[in-house]
Image 1 (cartoon, helix red, strand yellow):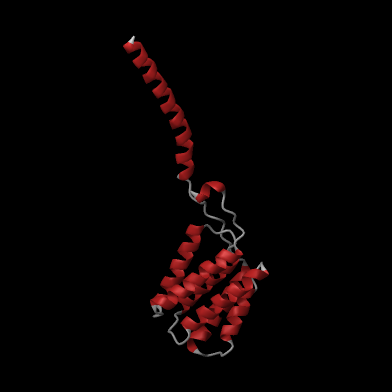
Image 2 (image 1 turned 120 degrees about the vertical axis):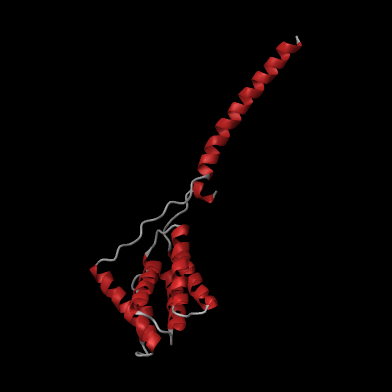
Length: 178
């Protein structure tokens, strides 16, 4: 009678293990899911013109050529604000960017990349956390490449994240919380 009782116990344990596996497998698969990257906006001709303006604004701030360049920078970025609640964060991003590039040697190519990053920060409304982090890192690296101190570059990068936080339209799905 002992072998029979033992085999029944063993069979019920196998059945319970299978049920547990069937329950855990989907949970593990879902937990392995990460937030999908969102679509990035593509600049059309009008945006390309604005990116050129933003790049010039940054260059003028860096050289001190035009005292109104920082105001122009804020204006050019504010065009892309879709939610009025994001406007103060974009204003702060403009202010921080202008402050750190002032009196630096800003090569044209770096100014263009920085202009694109700032525009993408404001216009990219469905970016994933990974995309935002990459944008922050690239912005910080660009600023440090022109001699901006690490802490100041971090402050601009942090504001990139803040603009994204207040302006994103992307809703995290339930499985992205794991």
